[in-house]
Image (cartoon, rainbow over all chains, first blue to last red; front, side):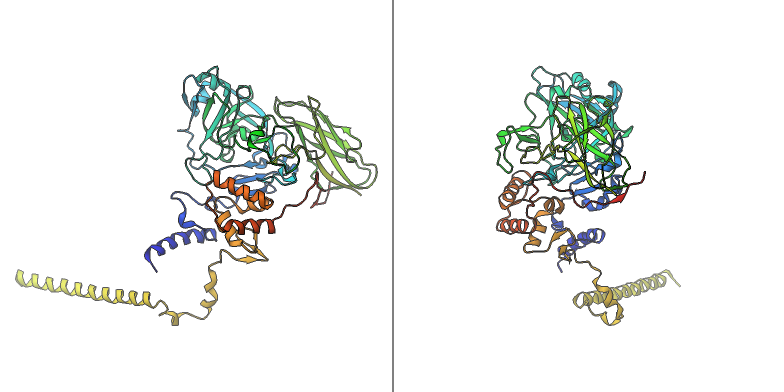
Length: 406
Length: 157
């Protein structure tokens, strides 16, 4: 055996011994990269997630909730979906962390430490609904490319931080500013240091809203690493990809931000409706802004069997992007008739709203309880899939649960 | 005993020690070299039951019930080409979740080459795409699917 081969094989076989599999192309593995499997093979322990969370992808990590896991008014970390485009950063040191505000339209490029941000600016706490733009993708036909989210890529946690507006204004915003773009420290899957896994943003008016935060706390504690520790941009009501994790730089742009996943077909839908499966040119795709009206029945879990004559209490949450939910209804006859649910006002703008109703069933048998929210513009959720789009975004079709009355 | 004799005795002692060490070195080195050339030389010492213990090394590409255990991919023509080209950067779960036709898989590969540093697949591309469309074909879902895989339970008050 050649010595060189022996050394290579023995190094790799020590990995193999731990992981139990051989790393294909292990010999080409970059120095300093710990294989994901070695970090911790159990994502539920690694990220403190509920055992019923569903792993869609383990490289990169993408994990979604099920409807019944989202019953809390404020979503706990254990039931928050995980969406990653790249590799989760390691060895984050909050003491040396800085945030830089730069870009063509910044008056003075400035860098802040975390303690600068915490001491210099007023802190605010908001409950903010973050939904993945691709939540519901699994239902599109023909299928759309990407992680096949069903219904669980949404949460509403309580976020504490400083207003992005206060920080941007401290650095100074030129009059030609049109967009902000975030940059973060997560690594691209290819480990190419020149590539950013994701660098998205939003127009200035969204960036300057009261509720758009540079958050350092989630549900009263340090943000968990997987959700963006130590600093996350949080822009409720918009595709959650606007809410960049591990943010260390925000650029004030004099043009629409052109970072990774801002261009091409990413987080874009056809500007004009298309037939299912139709090809759409990049220039005919428009950036998604506010998310559409939607709701989830979080209690009971689908599959409930109840006794005849017993009323069933249902509850859940409804949200409408930048808007509020005005009306909440349910149907047990596939939309032939609708009954009203009571719905609470949101805790603050961009927080999801809680609804409940007591449902009576006329006779025994199989039922589906369908829920439908209507926003303040009078736009309701469709019962069927909304317009097909190449990347499978914005599926806000009604959620339903199965119930049997015996 | 004068100093010269004492010195001579010490030199002899050191000499004997060095000779001993050299002899040991030659024997050990020779033995090791013999073992490298004939690694099975000690096999007669092994007890029969150790034979049972030899296959501890798990085959990383083992197939169980028609599934490639490590990746969860279906065992079919082109499997290892798919494993070797499609599960380095991302999980096989991203492959099996996605169901596309030939044209869209080719477009996806092109996108990965343009933006994600995927290498040129050469003649393997056809094998890979054939594997995917054969084993993971699109499923017609229509405008809304029937609820399925319902886990029925008694709801207590």
